[in-house]
Image (cartoon, rainbow, N blue to C red):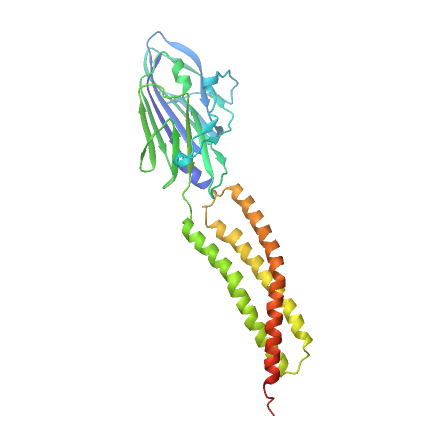
Length: 326
């Protein structure tokens, strides 16, 4: 019994919404002998989703999910998947499952089709977007009586980056490959969504917020405290109020810095990756950055108080020199 052709389609478009990938393998098989009833095992090189099915010549065949089976080393899922744009390989962890079923094959040509949902593994690196990984075990096809043709197509979400091992050709939003023999024990894939906002625009937003907090806020504190000092003087209020104003202004600047850090760390960071694609490792870095921003804001609060006190006393003195209207 031989495989004349295997057509493998991996539809990864569901990953864009955080859903599963759809895997479908169709085998054109030929039984050269008498009618054969045999048990077959289909190896799944990723986390098995909810849906699965097996069909022989268009008729659904009962199957068992997560069936126990002996796995030679060549049948194991890949340990790594390739890095995007030539990056280093990414560690891949998935327990290979199996679909077990029994088929009866009369002499002649038949079509065997297997379809299932696969939960891709996610890898959080130094990028705002997750890397999605998927493995597909090719090696079992070698154990058939013969094999002559493998057609592979990977359908990607629009604009996504992808890397495969063995290498497949990129055609638009698809990866395709044609092989006359099994090219490797496993097919390993890494895919990633494009950034939601260009990196240069995020950098401009970050620097704008930082400059507003570090430059514009002190200018506003200086002008506000000076004007209020003059107002206190012309109203014949005690000079001690200038001290209270300085303390409040310093704390206000501290609050502005903290709120700015909050907007940078959480609001602007959300612009970096699409929903369902945000890497959790980036959140860890943002949390650390927010903590350091709070520490820095507390350290700069005395400077805000000094600026406010100087501006307030200066304005108070100017207000004293102004003539009082009758």
